[in-house]
Length: 264
Image 1 (cartoon, rainbow, N blue to C red):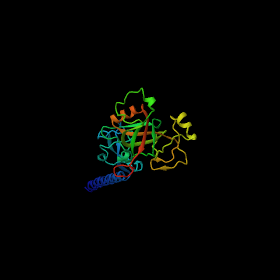
Image 2 (image 1 turned 90 degrees about the horizontal axis):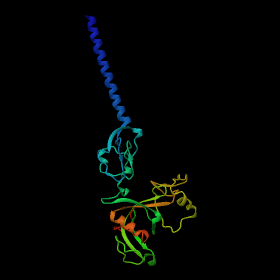
Image 3 (image 1 turned 60 degrees about the horizontal axis):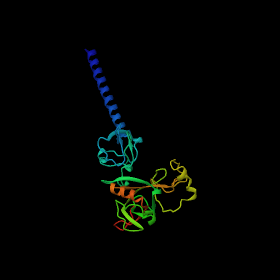
Image 4 (image 1 turned 180 degrees about the horizontal axis):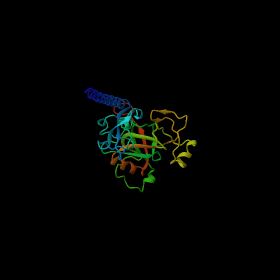
């Protein structure tokens, strides 16, 4: 009888010890998961978020990621990214970052699209920056050159010198490496030390200089010269702009917005 009692007590004690051990390890595992892992929003496997397209619930998923691997401005809730748009491609498995989905990225609005033009096709008449409100003009060729050309279709030629095409906001200013730059100043002639790159190596990316200063995400002293400017245009504005290029030089200049302050 005593042996049976001792055996029963031993079995119960062993079971209780096993239960306590399991509960303790489960608790420690949950605690470790809570401390070492956290939820983060990522792009679903097999998908790619394209620029300027609204993000849907089919594009993203919540995953537990090691805390050390989570980037500082990652989104943690799917609700915070639905309907937002990215300014660059985001590939499967990537974390969604706030800086890629910020509202101040000048994304195209309804009925508009992003168009970028080589700087050789346009002539800034004032210093311009991304976000500046600008007027877009066509400065006509000489009357002799225009004599045999038909009247424009998308805009009216009411002056012999220049015509205002439309007003808009500059969406991007990039260098020949395709990297955003802080400001673009008007220049009639290219500096002698900059001629070789755009004419002979425009398609080659160059590494930034060690002494290059940076201002947030903008390159204050780019190692490549300004090369592209972009607008968010309607179909009508795009057709108007491309047609106007046949009649003269496209000039852009900054103006004050309706509040009397220069746009940032």
